[in-house]
Figure 1 (cartoon, one colour):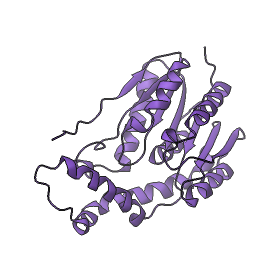
Figure 2 (cartoon, rainbow, N blue to C red; figure 1 turned 60 degrees about the vertical axis):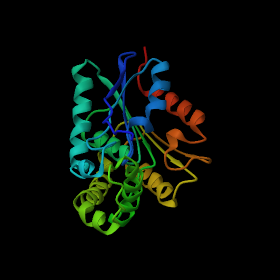
Figure 3 (tube, helix red, strand yellow; figure 1 turned 45 degrees about the vertical axis):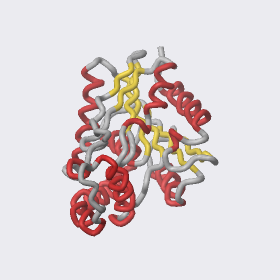
Length: 245
């Protein structure tokens, strides 16, 4: 039977310009690893990690919440500062996009790229994603018990409610973002994400911003059919705003 192991952080060293890459809810940094490798091939230093509990069994996963993951993002940002990086861009997808936006709201960043960010996510919406993760995890269970969805829903309430509040608080402070910001979304994703992209674009205080749709992409844009175009667009945006040497 396969065993789950929490992935170690990934640091790909390149130039004096660093990029922090943040993944989606219930996943790991595999969401953003191809993008990190691509950017590193173009000389950027890239750092990514998997949030606490992610990639592990449900009991461990539910011990943590978005406030814990936000503290880990701050630690990652400070880790890059301690390594001597002064130009730091942040890129995220879904939950990672929310965390990226919050970092740009709270700390100096050279650029922020948000992909598939949600403007609102109810507890019920979030539970749909969580239940899919729980179904995936069943293959790693030793006793192979039938998944009790009702029980899981009750147990997950603290995390899901904090997630719902985290989305709201992040969206309320978009006017604090002055860094160059790209807001990207997939046309194959739910309509909510296109609406959110336009909302972010309108609310951020930065005068240097862009918004773009990718016609063949769904939610995990970094792994989608538009990957090649998306990666080039991200590289061009970083090149414009970080002095890559």
